[in-house]
Every structure is written in C-alpha cells, then in structure tokens.
Image (cartoon, rainbow, N blue to C red; front, side, top):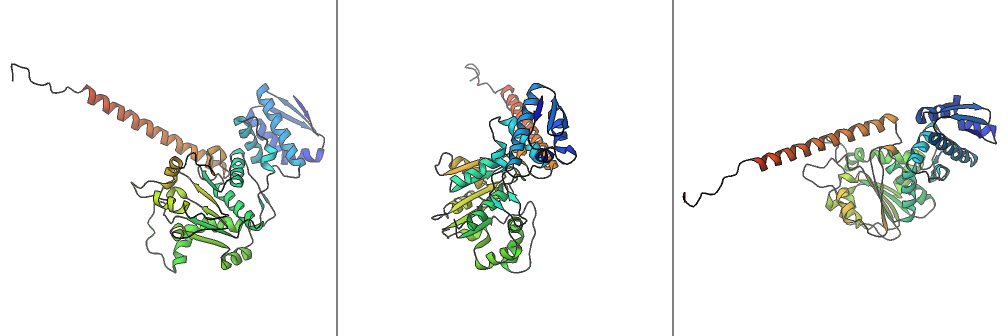
Length: 344
C-alpha cells in the first residue's frame, strides 16, 4: 500500500522523532513501513494495512487542525479503531476542554474519555467508573475549571470520603483542616496542574473553590456549583444518597470511583456499587465506564491492572469450583432413611 501526504512539514510531525510513530505502527500491527519524504510504503496483511492507513490519515488531519500528535496517540488510535472503526480520532484529540497554566490543551485521549466529556456536557449528573489512571477525576476537574472560567457556575466544590487505603494513620496533628488535607491532596494536585498557584490560593481564600471531606456536605444545598465527588467507591450507601440529594439549581455533579479498590470496613456496602443498580434508567444522568485500555499513565500501569484482573478471575473461578464440589459432596452423601413399617 502507498500513502501520499501533501505537506512535508506535517509528515515529519506525523512520523515522529526518528520515525518513532512509524516504528510503533510496525510493532503493534506487525507490518512494515518505509518513509520517503511525504510518501509511505506499507506492506503486511490487508486488514492491518487498512487499519494503519486509517490511523495515519486521521492523525494527519489532527495535525492539519494545528494539534500535536504524540507516541501514545498512535497507540490509542490503533486501540480505538480496533474497537470501533467508526470513531473519528481527530474529533477526540481536538476537543479542547481547557488550556492549562503551561498553555497545553486538555483534551480527551481516547474514545471512552470523549464519551465521558460529552456526557458531562449533556447531563447534570455523571458517574465515571473505572480503574486508576483512566483520567476520570482529571477530566472532571478540567470540566469544572472550564465551567467556572466561562461563568457557567459560580463555584467549584471538590470532595471525597476521608477513608484510609488499608492503613490506620492514628492521631494527626494540627487543625481540623490539617487533618483532612492529606485525604484531599489528589484534588489539590489536579487543581494546581491547571491553574497558577497564586490563582488557586485566591480562589480557595474567597471560597470560589472549596475542597472538603464528604462529611461536610450534610445539610447543604449546592446551587450554581460544579461538584466533583472523588473516590466514590469508599462512600457508604447512606453517604451516597446524602450527597446525591445535595444538588441544587444550576449545578452539575460528577462522581468518580474504582469499584475494584474499595477501602470500606468489611461488611459495609459501597454506595457507588449500589447506585448503579438503583439509578439505572433514571433520566438526566449518565454512567460512563472505563477499562484498562483507557489508562493514560505509565504503560506498566495497564499491565498491572490486567494482572490483577486475571488474579481476581482465577480466585473467583477457584471459589466457584470449590462451591460446586462441596455441593456435589453434599448431594452424594447417604441420607438417613425413615424406618420401615416392621421396624416401627
């Protein structure tokens, strides 16, 4: 297959430094790619060549719109088109949510992230559920800051339950705020990544941005606000209901969590797990799901998540086998027969 592009400058960006992007295509799709200026020669299986052509053309169009292409975009483009040939990568990678303090565009990095962002635009209540590193909280924060900047809301409220991840930290010194700040640090980190430190401090001082533990939400009505509840898998059913009923007029709420990392005490049910069953089909809200293919952290994180998923599946399989074997032994055990007429 031969592909010819019309702009040599854009071709250099498309091929990547030392043609890294083309090498990723070769390794991922098991094809051969040779570049000569603005012309590419591809060889391999027909279906793989068609996919490579689609990825290259869509990312070239992304470059034409003035956006950059990174090595991870090549990988995500391949994964996305393998899942669904109808997706438009240029629409995903050029959907600017917010421009951060380093003048970088914050955009979706995959199909599921694009669906998540669109759901936040269309609905007043959105659940983002999936493993760590899929951008659930970060994109929600970006949408919140963008809404505040456009004056669509008057304030941002960021909250999460103060639950330790399998540890008991004991007594923490300082004021009440000092005690809860460690639990809320990830929200502060995302905020500082988007805005200058001085601006963040000013917004916090004026109460335009509020970062508080979930327990502080009881009894409040949150009007004209963009509310983000993070780590929602660690809410109890009562806490989730309490939070959901805080939403006031002209407000949006985004709830994020990973149901595989529940740190609640044994026997306590997760409000995030229950909400999926209770709120299914309720109009005006949306559930968005992510999986390991959506991880935007170090590539090793994706492999770690897959390894844990396999371990969990093996554990469930062993449990089910043991349960069936125990049931069969119970059924095969001799039962005491009632005495005969003569014996009685």
